[in-house]
Picture 1 (cartoon, rainbow, N blue to C red):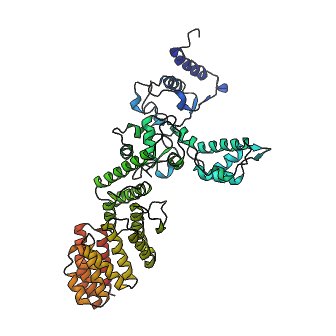
Picture 2 (cartoon, rainbow, N blue to C red):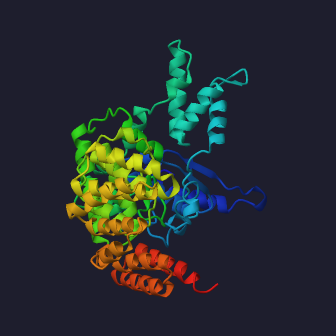
Picture 3 (spheres, one colour):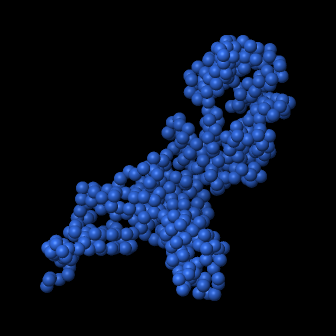
Length: 516
């Protein structure tokens, strides 16, 4: 005990203490509980001198219960730290090693090993209970229920937001103002500063970049940030405000409140972004999404996900459509019609100000038209056409599907004009428009014209299906079924799932007439 309290001596004392604890008589044995809060304050993570001492202390005292809390997870199970700390890797710290957990548990359950727990967010009931107990006078809550309700809703359960709200409540009372719900219906700039405080400059850059995205993976985050190396994005994913769903298309997303604060709150940090910085990041994000979609090959899950994120980026930052136009054509090609509008997009067609607004409304209308009256579909598509925001080929898409809806409403003249305009333009939908004209002839009873047109349509105009549509009203069910079978075979050959399904359904309908 006469030794100088240098690093070597301090590193040995825990072993002596653990030995003394182990030698206590059976009736007097205890398990010390040792708490280390705000672990992120230990200092420079590049040298890790103090962390090394703390880790050695924990290692040498296995008969104590350690509770270490902080904004970031402990990295001691990471083999990459070998040489910086004395004991590293999953063998030394099996309870700290990352483990995959079911998606349903990732929001409010252990996010890493069994001994490393993400505290997570408070439930609304917990938020209200915390705020009611945090400030009291004579046993009664100082924060009124209406104020607590607003704070709870804005917090998304984030404990830091609750504590900042309490501080604001006290400040308002100090200056003689009675706190009201409106005083808390906003983001806190301090939330941004507290979030960024222990991030490296590159990690801050990545955080601001991914706040533009609903979800991301490490490569997407790196490209959105415009970095050439993935390490900052990888480190950011280990922060507790980044949530993980290992079964998602993109596994990571920012906590909703942190994302809102980073995007919308007044940023007072020295490296805050200008409007130009945000727009450049949005361009990078849109380009990165397009690259992922183009290089991943066919697949509607990624297509729809990229469209949803891309349309919102282009809309919010007034960007050119770029690859979104090709993605829109890929979306309509299968006639599957998944919901495409971003979650925060309303259905008000009077708010069309950018090409992305118009394209979102167009695809949203096409997806909804099977579940709403065709007159509503016509009104929506007319608004898109009249806005004159889309390039010619996408405008033709709106005109074509409006003509289809007008046909269903019994407006053959309006439908024929729209179909003829699209056919005359010679664009991607010209064959489909010529098929539409054949259908109009069939509905008008001009079967010779309809059949003659069908023979000229080819695969692009779905000639076999149009022939079947002519034959079955004449009672020639076997001939119609044969035409639909040929249409189905062509669709399978071209890999068009929607057309295959339509042809098969029509064939089943026709054959039902031949066998009760």
